[in-house]
Length: 211
Image (cartoon, rainbow, N blue to C red; front, side, top):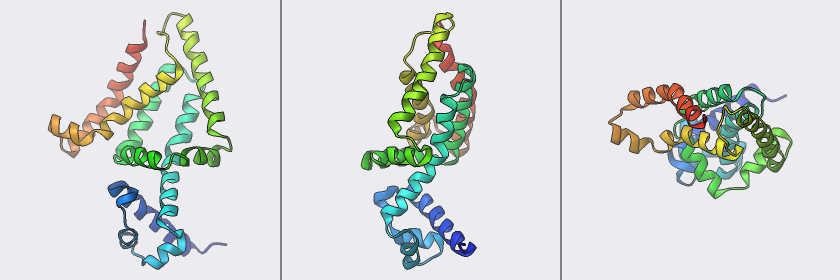
């Protein structure tokens, strides 16, 4: 059985790495800074994670584990489209508000290490990425097509539906410095903007899909 102190130390290192990687990116992060933030020496950090790359993989997996499975389950459910959109937006905005630097970090990591995403999906679901996405897409497209036939929705490809929705959620965080400067927002003002988007974004998105 693992020593609770060992688990606590490992968790502290992971928490510290999470904070440092989000602040500086993987390339700009230094193991000494991570060790200092965790309150351990570099030797202990390397004992638990061997290298900065291994630590980066653990942080990437941790972030994706909190985002990917819930959103995939939501999109692939039989929930009504309007409710899917509202729940998707609320979940995504809440998650990103807690970690506003995550979009920039994930984009950089996926560009540098594109193989990490399919590997992580397989470890989380037991399925290849190419097996998960088509199932979700088929479910969503079937729902969309039924609504189009009922003349309550405009025609749209499922992938365009998802890309549009994700983009509208992520953009304020990815462009945070620009938005804060242009709109003269402080941290509290940005939080209010995001809170308002929980209502404004689903309404805008769904209105755009109505015939």
